[in-house]
Length: 498
Image (tube, rainbow, N blue to C red; front, side):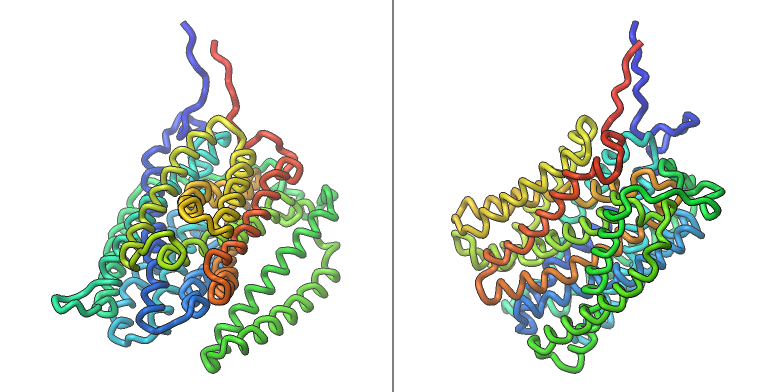
């Protein structure tokens, strides 16, 4: 009789089974998806209530992703010291604080008050993203790391289905006279989230959560690392990718400066000048420091490994594409669809989009158990390039269906890029995770550009922006084997029977 020696999906090296811990951690992804789903519906709500343009409403996305940008490094630092459990509990309490803030924010009824609540919740979610993503990759055999993180992120897809439904119910609600009451009931779903996460925080304090490190395949944690660092393999490529990260970092700082400036001057044209000026200034300073310190890069730095530094860029552009498509989905359906669709119906259709997203996550997890992660991600990125092109061409029903197809093919990208980026980094995966989460700031910058194009040329033409972003993701995943030097490590290992 033949028995398979193939390891289980959640099997530990000592015979442990991490299935329960995995399910508990996966609940965090459902929370993340629910909150993000409401954000995407909130954009259109503020366009209607406050008479904002597409570009102006993108400040909702900016406030959301600003929380990630500001808290990613502190989250990584705290997770390294408190462990996975401590990082998760801190994140949950911050989400609760942001959720409860929406109660007074509704009474204040000012745009800045709602943006503050969005930013607070995102800051808490940053801790959960920084901790939970790498944790799922170590809760079993390394060859299934991409499969596990995609399964966990499938819960994210479930949350994204119900988030827009909650948003449609409370942000676009009406009273018996038919008057809009969304401004008065907007706090309800957020207060509900706050209560749930407080309960979750108590559960995580009591639950078993072993602190497991991934394998250090690049010898980053050798005891003699500081005494005798090895030469950096492919140093020119490592330095080029590091500078490219400085470029997007400069753009992120420029966006933050612009947001502060627009508190005092709301003129969008002035904001563009502030953005360009501040971004270029930061880039010049960063470039000078880069050239002065370039010889300090050693093989024991995570930045010396192109598969990691490339992942931060790929994640920046992927989240940029995703957030733009999610944010303007309702605008596309109400202005460019071949039939007349109301805001509320479009909000419900957003849940259909997230059903496609969820279907992609579950089917993607199964596909990733059979094929190399970078190969699958590359195919999905190329499919999204085609989908965006069909939207830009304004082909009626074909373009409308393509939007839902894009949701399906976006599904595995975030978790798979994450798994590819932290591959083989050992204990430093937590620090690497914080940088990849920090790259989510792409979702705060690029939707402004997409909205600007949409204001002037139509939102369908604005899909040229995510099309370009998916091009970078496709390049990263196609060249990942060369960047990592580990051609099939994240693909399943086929073990024979005996």
